[in-house]
Length: 325
Length: 285
Image: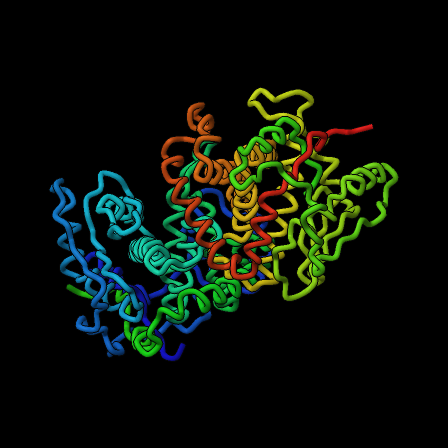
């Protein structure tokens, strides 16, 4: 991946005005030398407890602020097979969310992001009021992101973070990018008749995670950590019959995303192990899990991707969390 | 295929209940040759107590019949399948050796956990021993085939291997499906589910998730035979509604990634065979 791709789907665009620039300073950088050794167990409760004082800033050179961003994606690159719509919510409480999404042209940018994907039929991607957090994709149907889900993320993302904590925009962007790519992945499996071994929902998480780490370390850090952080913050307890769900528990999805991130780039994500966020026993498998995922992507998805367009998308500037407007 | 139970089943099967069953179900040896690329071996046990296990598996010709069961499969390399002492209750595929190890301890553990009479939830001893052991074989076969045939796996590979196992169990008619699926599912009822965060980091799904995955595929593939799981509320309706689609997804994955490596005529013959025997799962003197 040449060039720093700044990440994030237009999604990030849902970030409220005046948000602190994301490239400021994530708190979850690698531990100071030796700091990881004494942490016998993860802190109770939320994993991403902001604790800037205990952790050094990321060794990774934080990308310089996008003063002159690389090519921002031009909206006319959009995938002509993808239609987008912001459905009018019945409940007025969701109107500000819809307005924000529209103002930031989130779905229009998603069309651009998906431009390399060759689809044999039209796919509608919409935001809508679902009266649930999620409206599962049905074969032949649209992809729907529910206003209720976006509202939930807004609610969970902490508002009063210490200055050196993770910015709430990171969770908001990561959770949104994750949800959109997850749902689009399920639609893609259906439309392209991809053979999917393993539970479809886990497969969709893997494909979403794989795409999220194709835009450089900076983007990967923000989106993967943001998505994982959201799963962690959901803190739902799973009991007997909950396990009947076709969705996996948030705690499993949390580790799956971290494992993809670590497998893709062990050096940049080593702090996950140093800080005991990813148990060593699982971490040892992440590289081979990632190779298996890359192989599946190459064999099943890549034949449906226009590689020239993919390079263009990879070199564009995505996810400007601090974008004004 | 391990010793299977099913006596009554066979009678019924002969009556044409099995989906692909012939007029009178044939025995493997009359119809099928072994797959010459499947190398089988009953390795002497390390502990004397496992000698009886070995003797029974050998007498039942479990590995020989497995090789016949796999005869439609075109393998680009040799696959080894062996029974052995492992020092642990397990069955596992060893990629470096292209080998499936079926541990005597695993079989012996099934005998230990299987209820003497039907369990309160309606699982019988025969189902647990027969279904549990076939599941171990099919699950490891899944890992082996994903590896040897370079089959891409998008989801968790452990779930993928479970899916292949369940799918195979569902290709031999309702009666075989009931015995094998129930037996496989029972083994996951017996395990503890994760509670702490770290326990969720395992690359395997939670036992309860795996239980529901088996029952869901079974309900998706053979709705009538597993309707009781929905009626009794064991399989929640919200999941049950998704099961036909989940089964269709596995069938598609099988058709696209495995069928090209299978001789379909031979496969039909394999499906017409009566694999399970009345005495399977029981100690016969």
